[in-house]
Amino acid sequence: EPEVTQTPSHQVTQMGQEVILRCVPISNHLYFYWYRQILGQKVEFLVSFYNNEISEKSEIFDDQFSVERPDGSNFTLKIRSTKLEDSAMYFCASSLILTGETDTQYFGPGTRLTVL
Amino acid sequence: AQSVTQLGSHVSVSEGALVLLRCNYSSSVPPYLFWYVQYPNQGLQLLLKYTTGATLVKGINGFEAEFKKSETSFHLTKPSAHMSDAAEYFCAVTSSGGYQKVTFGTGTKLQVIP
Image (cartoon, rainbow over all chains, first blue to last red; front, side, top):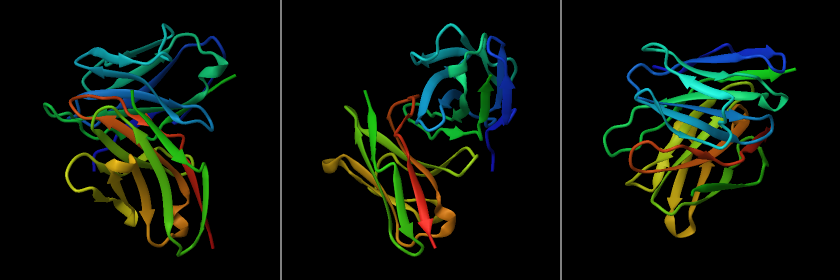
């Protein structure tokens, strides 16, 4: 069964450093998402991406964050200058949305980001 | 705006007992509802979903949930708990019509006692 994959599974970085989290969505999916889950808290929406553009972003997704689909398979989340509070599990998701329909978002296993 | 409330951040049941995890939603438009499960140190796995049609939906691992519009609820049940059901369960909502972000509840950790 196709699945969303994410790399790395765990990333440790120093405060102020840039990190890039990578995701490979399910191949025929058209919408891509990033969510995060701070330890002990609920999963929060960050951003959605369709047709090489951001469709929606939350208030969390400030100028420190950016997303990109650099090629036909990868979807990346970049944090330019990490802060301690960016430490969280980051989930990538993808969905295949038919016209007028809402489809299930399939989540990857997550990347645990630890900022020291 | 949409939201989800999960009653009980921790639920303990005995092995073989009924599992009931509660979820109430708020939505100004017809909701699409989901239950996801997260095993320790793993990602989110879809258990089941309600979009339209039959209000009782069956998912994987023997779980099911019933959409009750009048009660704005989507409780998750399983007749007989198994040790392997110990995990965190998230109720989530989105709305119909093209792309929509998923809004998650705060999660319920299920403990199964032997």
